[in-house]
Amino acid sequence: DSGVTQTPKHLITATGQRVTLRCSPRSGDLSVYWYQQSLDQGLQFLIQYYNGEERAKGNILERFSAQQFPDLHSELNLSSLELGDSALYFCASSPSWRNTEAFFGQGTRLTVV
Amino acid sequence: DAKTTQPPSMDCAEGRAANLPCNHSTISGNEYVYWYRQIHSQGPQYIIHGLKNNETNEMASLIITEDRKSSTLILPHATLRDTAVYYCIVRAFYGGSQGNLIFGKGTKLSVKP
Image 1: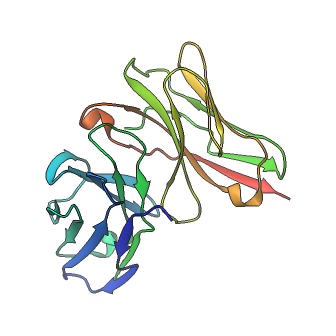
Image 2: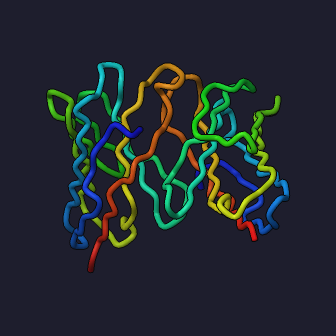
C-alpha cells in the first residue's frame, strides 16, 4: 500500500459526459502528479501540483483540468469525454519540492462507451 | 521525451539475478537515475535512485557507470512476483519541468520458473 488513495476505482460513462477523479496523497506529501495510461500510449504525464499551485504541465488536453485543494487532495476533471479517453488514470504524490521518489495510487480505470 | 534507452523485453530464471540495462548518454550533471516498475496495470512502484555512486536497498541494487552514461538495475534473486515492466528514468532532483517523471516504454521482465 503506497498510501495514495484514488477514487473511484472504476468508472463507466458515456461519450460527452464529464467525470471527476479524486486523489488523496500520502500524509504530508505536498506534490501531486496525474498520469494517463492507455494501451497504445504508455504512461503519459498530465500535470503536477505543489502545495496548491500548478507546477508543471504535460500532455494534458484542454478538455481536462485539475486542481489541488488546501487539504492537499487533488481532483482531475475530464469533460466532453470521447472513446479515446478510456484509460487508467494514476495519481502520485511526493513529499516536497525536491524531486524525490513519487508514490503511485492504484489508479482509476475509466471506460467511455 | 524519455532520455533513456532500454531493451523492450528480457527473461530471467527464478532465483537468478536479473540485470536490467539502461542507456542515458545525454544525462546532465544535475540529473539522477530513477527506477520504477509496474506490475500488470497496478500503479508504478518506486525501486531505487542514484546520482553517481552505486546504491542498494532491500529491493535492488543500482550500478551507475563512472561516466554516468549507463546504469544497471540488479534484482539479486528474482521471483515470479518480479515479473513487471521496469522503467529507467532520468530527472533533475531539483526544479520544475526538468524534474518531471517521464516514462518511456521500459523493459518487460519475465521471470520464469
